[in-house]
Length: 297
Length: 282
Ligand SMILES: Nc1ncnc2c1ncn2[C@@H]1O[C@H](COP(=O)(O)OP(=O)(O)O)[C@@H](O)[C@H]1O
Ligand SMILES: [Mg+2]
Image (cartoon, rainbow over all chains, first blue to last red; front, side, top):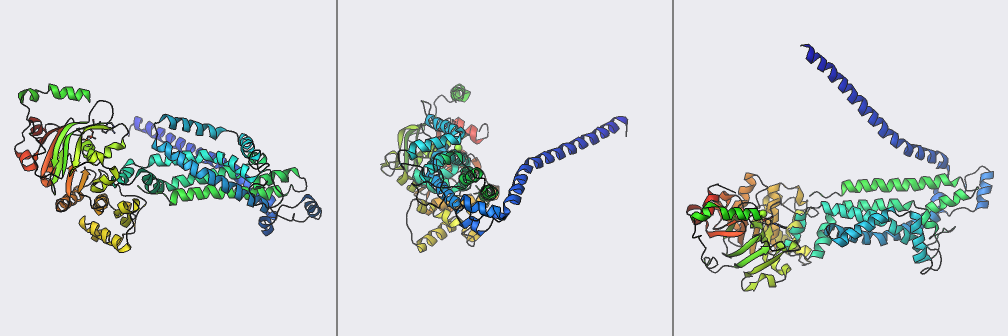
């Protein structure tokens, strides 16, 4: 109508344009941060797909001679990573058996005694633990288990090292989840005369199940790809080994071994792809559980 | 807290009513009470008391309302009756509460809470449990084994008592948290009833509910007093007037006045009660 509204109209248009540009830049940057993951997946798939066959999952890693002959004849390297898969399952499984109960108990304690001095100390230690380099945990596994307990490298030692590594994620997710649960729920149970330990076990923990499970799965996905601590503990093995007091292979250890053997170098891609898919799968399932099992209160 | 106490002491009413109306032996006001509160003081820590020297008998099969402005200690008094206040770590109390001849502070809190159930301000059904399991949660969580038929019977009876049966009988195995607020609160009452306590304590059970849900619960409480003794905290005076038989008026941690509801609303004995009832504060 008059000049001032016209000017503000123009300003308005400018602002809207800026807004649009800003939004698009943000979308672009967000997209950019996803690019490396897709590039990696693409790279691994292109180079590793030929190796992805049935024997890849069910046969032990080939020795260097077999691989050399196959490469020379331009054939797919025979064998697979079954020793690594079995080793990873056993080592990660045992690490979970150790870390899950301890982590949940610890996180529950922290949530229930938020203010206490001892809780503060525990919280501090857990935070420190989160920052301990994984190779140091390998050293711990070596000192605690390899030398005194199994008298040599062992899957058990690897599990102990990895269990320490997954502990912080379980503790913190349990604590955070339980803190969100309204106190009225605990009151409801206590007012029915339910003893405290049963209130925790039967009411509070089940209510927090989705958050706790999410933390557990993220913890597992964090350790499943660890190599360094296993080098000092589980060491590696060319055959499938189910005895936990003996050295054992693991998928990330195999990747390292393949890297060190020029004849086996082509196996790196498929083994890495397997590891990456495993971890992606774990992360996706953590998300799905967080959504599906969410308890409404 | 201290400043409010000072304010009370400076209150002009206090001077006008120099002879403060002391309730003469408030326990004996009630004939054969089921519950006797004797000179009870409760502190959340230190030497400040949230309620002080409260004495009152609770009449069997009646509704007793506890009224008073926010922060006056209604919830504290109620929770002291089934020892829920002990949830806070530094509580201590003086005086006693007697259920029959037993001092509840000498009972095991777990046994005590079987006899004195509680319903809270916000409906709090167990979110992981179905409606059915919520009703028998007291048994399940305490590891009390029941036959299927016994469970069915308890669930139906309790849900009928809270007039929820017809609304949920086809959805017994759905989660309780999908019900409306009013239904959830009735479910919580059913959960307390299922355990067949002698006394049910309710702490502002309708303050989170709409008027229709509120009136349903009020009707329900009036019906339930046939089988249970009910103690109801409310800061809604008209609610107390509508459904309670006896009323307590609390102010700054003190039981100012206690008597028949009708009498208290028509001829309050204490100036502070009168001021509260006429809306001068609260
Ligand atoms: N957990 C607690 N810790 C410390 N003080 C508390 C706690 N709960 C209540 N109080 C105090 O006790 C007094 C009475 O509170 P409450 O019984 O909740 O009053 P009402 O239910 O009448 O609103 C208040 O001064 C309140 O601040
Ligand atoms: Mg209250």
